[in-house]
Image (tube, rainbow, N blue to C red; front, side):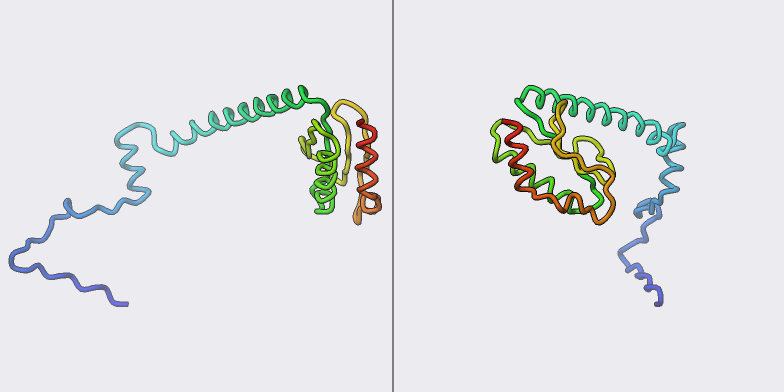
Length: 162
C-alpha cells in the first residue's frame, strides 16, 4: 500500500515543529530516559522488589493455614479425605463422601485434600485418629475404588463417628 500523502499547510497555518508533535516512545527509549534520570534502570528496580513480595505472600499463606487449622481443631470432629487428582472418579467419590458426611453428622468438618495428595490414593481418615478407608498406590483402572459401594462406606463412617 502506498503511504498517505502529507497534508499541505494552508496559507494561515504553519507547520508544527517536531517538539510540539507527540514523540513516539519505545521501550528502549523509555529505558534510556529512565537511566539518564537515575542510576538504576527500571528493570533493576523490579528485580529487587519481586523476591520480597513473594516471601510476604508465602508467609501470609502459612499464617492463613495455621488459622484454619486452629479453627478446625476447636470444632468437634475433623475428617480428611485425600484423593488423587489423576482421574475425575476420585474427585466425584470424594465429593459424594463429603456431602454424605456433612448431611449425616452435625458439627463435623470435612477437609478435602488439605495437603498435596499422593498418587493413586483414596483415603478417608479422622484427623489425628483412625483411618476409615485407605486405598494406596492404585493403578488404572482403579478397580478397588470403583468396586466400593459409596452408600455403605458413608453409613459405616457415620456409625463409627457416632
